[in-house]
Length: 208
Image (cartoon, rainbow, N blue to C red; front, side, top):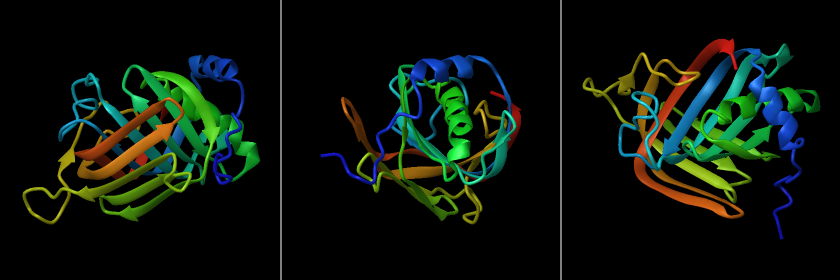
C-alpha cells in the first residue's frame, strides 16, 4: 500500500503540461538549490555537456519568484532523472493556486534533462546548510539525498565552479553525495560517494 503522506494524484495530464513547457514564459527565482548524481566529482553536465549515464536528484526550495506572473514563494521541487533519457517531477506547493504554474515551471525545467514521465504531489523536505544537506521526498520513501561540503584550497570556503551552463546557477559549489536513493515504480537508482552541487543563494531570471 502506498504511503498516505505521498499524494499520487497527477497534477494534470502530461500532454497539456508538455505543451505549456514548449511555450516559454518569463521566470525569476531565488532560493536554495542542491543536487546529487552518479558522476565522479565533478559532474561535467553543467560544464561541458551531459554525461552519459548520469542519474540523480535535483532539488530546489524557492524563497521567492514567479513563473508566468504567478507567485512561486514556498514551492519545493525535486526532479529524479537519467540525463537525456527520463525525468520525474515531485512538487510541494503550499498554495493550491500555485500548483498549475509550479507544475508548468517544473516540467519546463525537467524537460531539459529528459522526457518527463510524471508530475506528482509529494512532501519534500530540504534541510541543512553550507553544503551539508538532506533531501527527502515522501519522508525518504521515494527519494533521499545526503551531502557534505568539499572545501577549497583555503580550507574555509566551498570549492566553487563559475560561468556554468546550468539553467539557474551560473555558479555552483562543490559537495559530495554521501548517500542517495530513488524508487518509484519501475524507476530506481542508488547514489554513494559521488558528485553533489549546491547553491544556497540561487538567483536567476529569464524564460523557460
